[in-house]
Image (cartoon, rainbow, N blue to C red):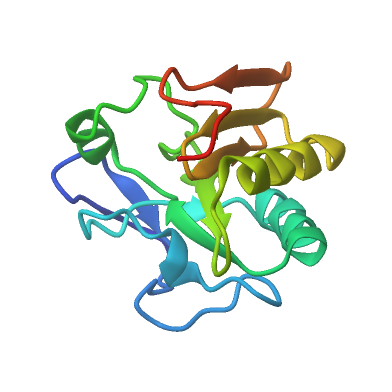
Length: 155
């Protein structure tokens, strides 16, 4: 039976699965890689998003998650968008993460290649940032953006 838990942010449904365990979400992704950085334990990654992320990993090679689930308080603390796809939805699912290459060059050229692959795989939301991209499986229309710190020249 699910029970409500609170981390001081919003109550979320606890399915009894601990993210501290090495729960495998796909061939190459573990649940702990997506945990909120504040340690609150809120939310779960949407399985459809994980399946799409695995396809991206298969095409691009090893990836590292730089940001996954964010509770509202942590999202606000780091200056995230108030309606961020990183925040658990009403079902407690998160449909977004920020990723970069696990090894090798994180040059702007390679990050742009990762962005292009994500677009070819039809992620709904894709953001281009210095050294990483944001990908999400939001409902509704596509969204594309480039962060104001992005530069076309490698530094």
